[in-house]
Image (tube, rainbow, N blue to C red; front, side, top):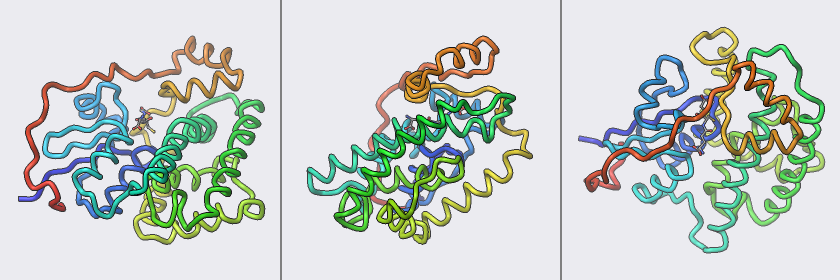
Length: 275
Ligand SMILES: N[C@@H](CCC(=O)N[C@@H](CS)C(=O)NCC(=O)O)C(=O)O
């Protein structure tokens, strides 16, 4: 019998999308639970004390956090590889994954609150200006790095491309897109990725979710879930008073304690089996 693989994900979460792209690229069959749907919150909390997606459950081996999940997938299903073999390229790809997770995500997620959350105030001008300023640096660095090959960290697709794609395809929709004339390599790279089936499927699924969200009552849209990097970027934009007002108005949710579950799971059987 094939392995049982469950991904706790959400079509709007760039971290979950990163993992889903990695599963798709490696051709690993899996089931999906929308962990951010209110009805599934208890199930998600049972596997991740922080109550965040993504979480991967591989026959009882529970892996939390997108970077750990992609690294785990690479160990179990090494081909096609998502980490460059050459040491320098490996460091480069991991650095872009980290930038996607800790800088680009906070910028785009924070700016997005004024598009989908139920709010009465408007996006502060300083936040929009800071988003444009910081993303300009990201766009310029990607334009620089895409001079060497078709993908961000060289000639082959890697975790860098998979981590960046959900973010870079969202920039225009939240009003902070790049100028294709000034960043032609960045534009060409996204065009190349968009037509790969796994990436095209991801975009379709997310577009469908975003179109439905305003009509859905199945998701939290009043309280905003805050954690480290997103708080840091908001404070760096001078938004301490705004955040304090959010907390005072009971418009925030916090992660729970991220304590590992019990024990070391037993050794996995057919480790390279698909599906
Ligand atoms: N460091 C984590 C971050 C995951 C994360 O921020 N997940 C968000 C969605 S993008 C989440 O589940 N938030 C809980 C919520 O919105 O209720 C990872 O890399 O997986």
